[in-house]
Image 1 (cartoon, rainbow, N blue to C red):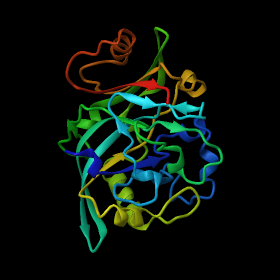
Image 2 (image 1 turned 90 degrees about the horizontal axis):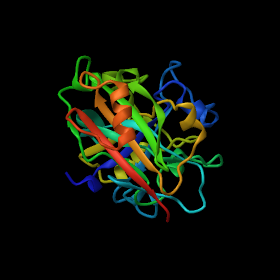
Image 3 (image 1 turned 120 degrees about the horizontal axis):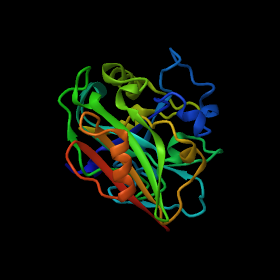
Image 4 (image 1 turned 180 degrees about the vertical axis):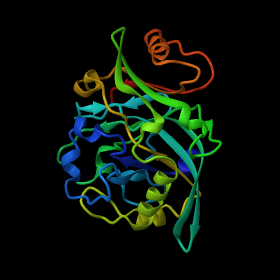
Length: 276
């Protein structure tokens, strides 16, 4: 699979409390939602073929984060991403079929004055991360493989390892399974260019209606350390999506501390933060 051919979207506000911790809840005060737990919007982080836009730069790396010049407030956003097949009908998204999942770092610059969510998400190559270990998804409904996985994240700095995000079961996403897919499909077809959100159907058209999409489905809440500490060159970011039937949170924490991850049943993303 050539990832540069896939369009990339993220889901904003799909874990209770994350936007507040990230200082971004105020961006969405005028966004109308049908219920209190509904995510706020979807946003693009990569759009192949689009002209005259920073979004045409492929931002995903398996092993590094390019530290942006002039920015000192960069945070890990630990997530699960879904690789989905897209079915169209009359240039509208008819259905999404998830086929794989992986650990994802929707790394973000905290830019209080940004007009659009995407302006905080893609500052060039290696501004995002996805594990090279993609796990086949048997189904994206209750009882499927992903239901058994947790998301954990760590920052390794100066020989010390700090938990960055709270260890979180994937099933704690506010919108998940068919509810999430139906909502994302609706946003792909109907989300407008309003406030921090963008016209997604126009971006799909610019991307020439790609057959597959990467959807990062939302970041977990932070630990107090993660909320208060930003990335620096020389740090290592670790995001691991692991099978909680095989490992507990303490075992994963020990692996992160030693830097030695072994065994099956995990999707691991390790990225070194490098100066521009």
